[in-house]
Image 1: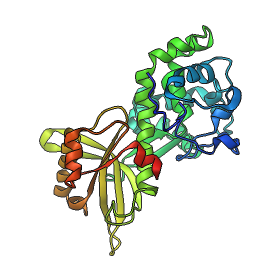
Image 2: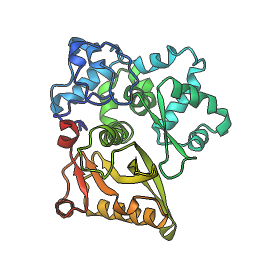
Image 3: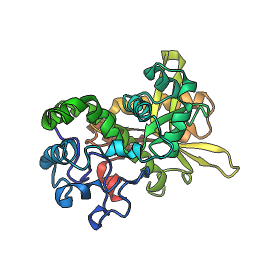
Image 4: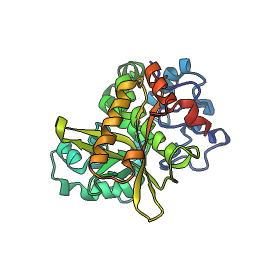
Length: 318
């Protein structure tokens, strides 16, 4: 059932932390690019040794009601001096964990007005628990994401089952039933962020036509098909005149094998961007990032230069 590859040695609360073995200088970090060294709080300070041991590690070290990590996500909010109504702040985080990323979507989930939660969103963002990404194509639109993976894990896996975990101690049953939520609400969004961080800071020279100035997400309307397309990765740069140009667009899929259909979708989005007059769209690199092997047709298309494929080895070799 594990969603974590052995070569990455991920924690359930986030991305690979190669420095954790030397002890946590700052065990409660809210950086968007690294995870807290929470594994040092587990008995023996050990991370999962393999994929086979990952499930038992989560049950024993995170979901067990006597584990130091069991209530850690709650403590993160309690320790913030500007947070006084913990219940409402947890509800906001739960709304985001459920896939509501816009201000209006979060407010609708909570059955409140958007203006009622503006202050709470700002406090969570200032505390580093939420990040706000601006749509690359619509500057007035933003998406909120949970910045701290342990908090995302708490709200996606633990909070919905809190009674069974706290009162009944049924950690193993809860974890077995939570595979879909864990993959969709924790690992998937985190993998998308890792892909954006990689494009921003670690992409090899020559992948994009110009230095990358910014990487975000974007939503592109498709009036002909009466739908919209969301891009997990939009790499932007500046040309010699200072004009912002699109350098690359892409998708990041953790569990789903990427194939020719994903490339066709990216080509359709590129066509829409060209029609809309976005500078650089016609020459933007099409990027596919995946935690699973790519299909043979997609590999063939990449060999002909139609796409650039980023595997786990590429992400962690950088």
